[in-house]
Amino acid sequence: MIDLCPQCHNHEWNKEVTPDKQQITCPNCGHSWNFKAMPLFILTGCSGVGKTTTAMELQQRDINFIPMDADFLYNLMPHETDEDYKNMAEQIMSLSKDIMQSGKPLLWTKAGALDCFEETYHLQFFTKIYYLALVCSDKELEKRMREGRKISDLNWITSSIDYNQWFMEHGIISGQKIDTYDITGKDVHEVANYVQHWIDEKVEA
Ligand SMILES: [Zn+2]
Image (tube, rainbow, N blue to C red; front, side, top):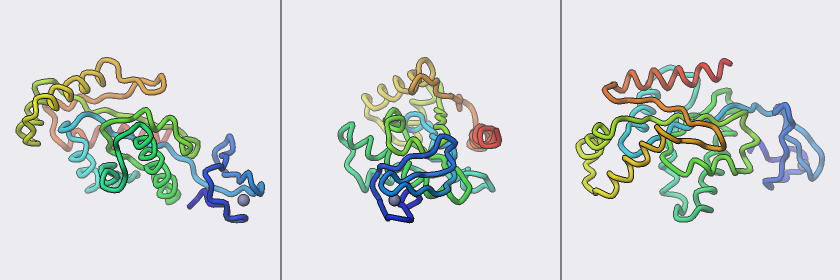
């Protein structure tokens, strides 16, 4: 909506954001209008590590950002190919750019396909994307998956342990190291406190 041209009603994804990120320009008619660019926050990590639980705890607080769970898109959109995942990232960012016009940035929980965010048309509407991966020890992860999520599929557990290790040891998106927070032995309040602080210091900066 914010990128719909108020003058010629051009709704194509061909708008340009000015370098100061304070205005959107329509290439069809030359009109420019104000908008608020903000950071986009992604809370990631493998299945069972506590992304949704943390977001639910944050929703109970008086906070300066809006927690959202990207999983609802799996019911609405195909999610098989790289193109599907890129479309999903576009929809997340399209929705976010409108919601943040209210003055609050968004925090999305999302497990994978993180590279897609960096290749989108909508990237220009954000000041920056910040990624935080919740990680834990292999033993803790297996316990959480088996006991917390009732997952017994060994391939799923093994691939999750590998993904968790990747975040801890490599975890790079567009040349930027993904921040990590080790939740081993921590309760949901401690994890939510950390995430809240991680966002607040970036919004205030
Ligand atoms: Zn226009």
